[in-house]
Image (cartoon, rainbow, N blue to C red):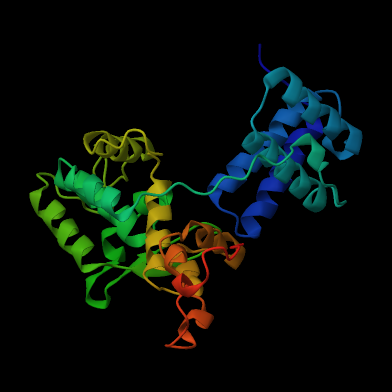
Length: 305
């Protein structure tokens, strides 16, 4: 049975899409927001979106939680879509009560140790798989950024990669390690069918590789390396890039720019992962005097706090 909605719904959703496109939102965001608003329109087929009230949204969110058992990320997407729709289409502010999508338990990002990264790279079984893994770890690219990377974005003379339309529709540059460049050249040279537009192309020439195919390639590398127990998402390689850069002494603001974060708070999470140096920290007091009395000279009955 085909789902229907109020005649005003089409106009409202078209208006939403026009506003989002005009404000430079990504096609994926436009699609996601439109989808969530369309679902609400279908939930209230006899009610014009222009007559939605706060309670209608509350009831819909409760319905999603009780009937469909939606995840936190789904609830958050609905809340963001509704807030934007109310503010820009209905011209009145409204934020979904946070109790309807309580924040999930905070978890630190998964990342691999340096030795685990070495295992992962050595376990790659094809030039393409190796190029994908090294590119993720060596540059900190997101999955979609790597997928849409074009041959012309590889600036070998400047040792950098141009990242177009990153998250938030922003362009940026990230570094191009010499090893990654060597691996990319080896991969390109060994391809029977050379990529023509994108660095990694699928079965259709000139078209980017599917995200699922990239994820499968990385997952197989984890398996071959004996790291199946680890978080094997491609994003873990991005987390590893940031964590190891921080461990190497690169300042947090430089890492923020390389990762394409809009807010430094997002990058600050990697400070919590930086354990290798934290365990070796020495207080300036310990270096203040060379002839500082050895603690072993204390009487054996001295209480130690």
